[in-house]
Length: 146
Image (cartoon, rainbow, N blue to C red; front, side):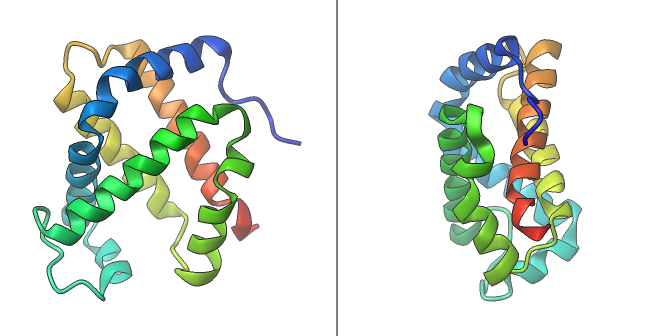
């Protein structure tokens, strides 16, 4: 049984903030992924098939958008993240074999980018709720590793 990680107030804050942030989701994802590849260079090994892993490359922008599209979908399904992210969890665990600690690193970078893009809107309450949400996403993505 899954412990309830997000309360109704958290969900309202997340949905409200996402209403503003979603218009820049592709940029947020590209910037967050690009930052992760620079700050945590060991994560580049998962993208060896890309010729250009620089933060502004086409591949980083494209995958960053894909990540944030999945985050947006997860926001609409916050009540059941384990089932909502089951396919992605299986893909990352069994096919891509991504170390689940990378989900936490990426989450941190997403928070940094959101705070930079929306300094007036990224209040401590938003920060807390988004951090809890992204931690829940990371746990759900790690589910198939257990």
